[in-house]
Length: 224
Image (tube, rainbow, N blue to C red):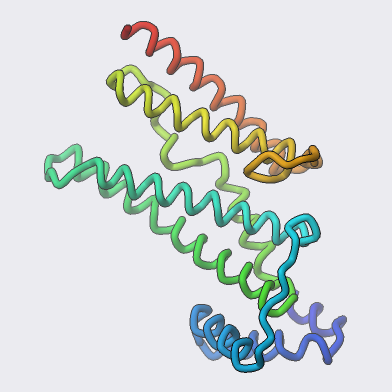
């Protein structure tokens, strides 16, 4: 992919990208490369232009959404870890270990996608790795860690059910916005998501969340 990118590109505009890729091959971390680029922009007094979201490439809009979703998932898992407390009972230790194992790859994906997205804003060039990372993210989008294993809500208390109700409703709204506006929030004009594997997965996830929401409402009524 990189070979085709440089072979078909313009040397005058792709030279910086080539330098960046060669530095990566030497093992320099992405964080260091990004900091170097930000520093050079400051020295040259060439701040990145303000780009309206509407004119951003589709892959960059998807990256922004992916970063937001990953950040939300990671934050939710942080909260769940905090709510577990400091108990060392067998059940708590097992749940804590599961959360930590699920959180680790999410943090890795978040850092990679975020840095590549920021690289685009600094250079104006879409990193070839970004679409591949987004495809990987799409494959796991229906496997939201904080929802797996929660299909049986019978064991939840009344307060926990209310929290779960709110969380599921937020998730439903986000998916509906993505399907209708290709954004996590409502826009002034609809921009429906075109037919794609991602749309199919989102619709499937939306249907599952709506079923969960009905079950939660039913359990809340029974506990009144």
